Image: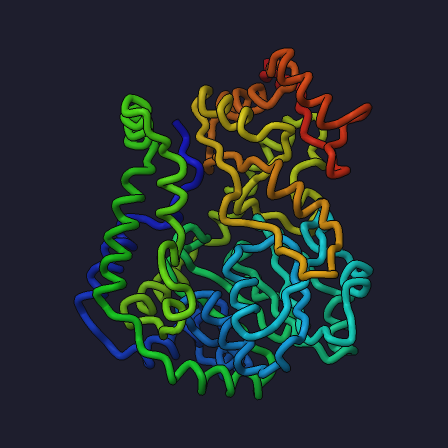
Length: 444
């Protein structure tokens, strides 16, 4: 059984992370090292050698922590509206509301997974003071006209690149005030936590640093428990062990999916704001620095994307894959729309692929009187299935996965349900098509 997603960390990194928890160290010095290394693209050169780029970075416990700091430092008037791309993790809009601000969703273009320039402008009002835009599922796209609009209107522009990190060549859009990068448990080049904010406004960065210094440092034993937890999960999600876990769960009549997805959340089961208001420990920062020194992140991301493209090429209409029209898609997740996600995931599991729903993502709720019909956002949240792709997956496995997605294999009852959702044509009730695929042909 292929698990839903790999943890992008090896056993030597996990051993290093655990050893770092016992060494102690100066968190401030480690933070400066991480900030310099991230700003210099992982080269380890001095900030001066790279034009001072390291001085624009702030290492934090999480992307959530960095957003909290940015909003506190910006000191926007209470009741101000914050435009948000309409799909993100719920904690992001909860943080916005904690500051007395009003999150306003702006619907996505299914092709790029970003709102269009016209959608941003149409959603704005005189109360709009900030924008939080997220690059989803591994897509990367220049913000272009949004940066011009934000500059013209005087908005704070925060770019959430948590799902988009791909190595030293991507540091966000230079027109964003703040670009946020995550090294959380299921992210690319994970350090099992931590984040880096690239802050291009010197005054904002100074204010964020001052606020950050007021927070306590994460306890070393908390990081040790985190490393131990994810070492166990990494073991449980290797294919042979995972297959056995699923078999045992099935024999006991347990649903393995909800427990696993609830476990991997970085702040699952915590009181959000007190949990995120900590500085990262020396142990976490040491592991972040080790992961940033990894020289093969770009190569690994390219291999991951190549595997996804091999699967996408088997689809009857590859353009229906979420984010297919983005200038860059690294396929942190490969998500496809299906008319009945529950039935689709069941069929994939029967074929050896433990596909998952994007349960960590949700549609930003519109405030009263600002209902905007975010149809694409609702479609993604309700209809998407994330495919469990692995680097180097053999052709026969990709053939089998594509065949499972073939509508002709769904049976008459499923076809009837598909027609009821799509009406006369191949579109869903949200106005977007669900994915048909062609039966793959094996090479002679």
